[in-house]
Length: 135
Image 1 (tube, rainbow, N blue to C red):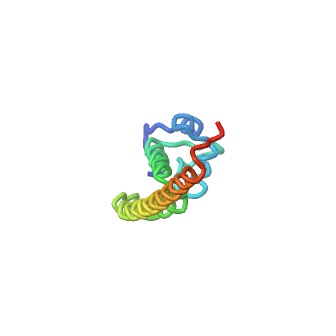
Image 2 (tube, helix red, strand yellow):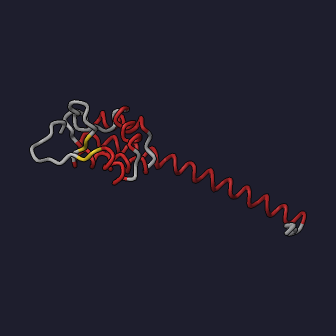
């Protein structure tokens, strides 16, 4: 998809950023770290994005919302490969999401334990000193 096909519309980086609620700096950074691409520029033209590249940016936004790191996104992009085969990327994406689910479960268990400790301590304080809040 690196080659622009006839009649394919190219959207400027500013328009893409505005439409997706991003900054142009974020899009440039994602391009610098190799998780997205733009249409090859000619003669100092601004970066441009075809509908394909805009869909990829939306995918990166979703991955970011899911908590994936830049490094994980780079790994997925590498798995996606030069052949642009989604089926090569999906198994690794599932593994990464499973790892994130496990981390979230661990955090939830830790927070539940902390909540229990705080609640117990609060009950102890109320029992020992009464319900004097000072208000």
